[in-house]
Image (tube, rainbow, N blue to C red; front, side, top):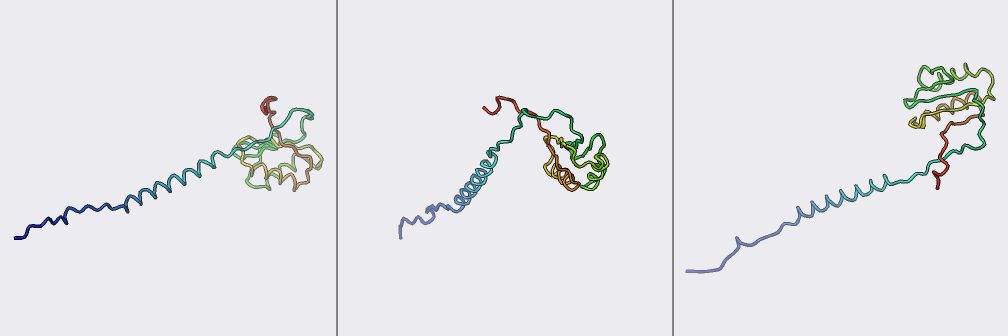
Length: 143
C-alpha cells in the first residue's frame, strides 16, 4: 500500500490577467479625464472698452444682431438667409452715402460668424467707418 502526500488538487494559482485588464482600464480612464480637466481650465482674458474719448453723436446707420442670428438694419428686419438680403437692406437704408458711420450692435451670445457676415456685407458695399458697440467696463475691474 502506498501512502503518499500528493496534493496536486490543492495547488493555488493566481491569475493576474484580469487584474491587469482592470488596472489598464482605470489608467486609461484617469489619463483621459485629466486631459479634459486641463482644457476646461483655459483662462481667456477678454478685451475691455473704455468710456473715454467717445463720440456721443448717434450713428447714422445701426445694424443689430440678436442672439438667434436675425439681422436688423435701422428698424427694418432683414428677411432671408445669407449675405445678399443683408446687403440689399443696408443699401436701401444707407442710400449712396458710403462715408456714413456704421455701428454693429450684436448680442453677447451672438455667434462670431453673424458679426463677420455683417462686416463682410458692409465691406462689399464700400463702408469704411465701422464700429462695434460694447458696454463700458467697470473702472476698477482690471485691478
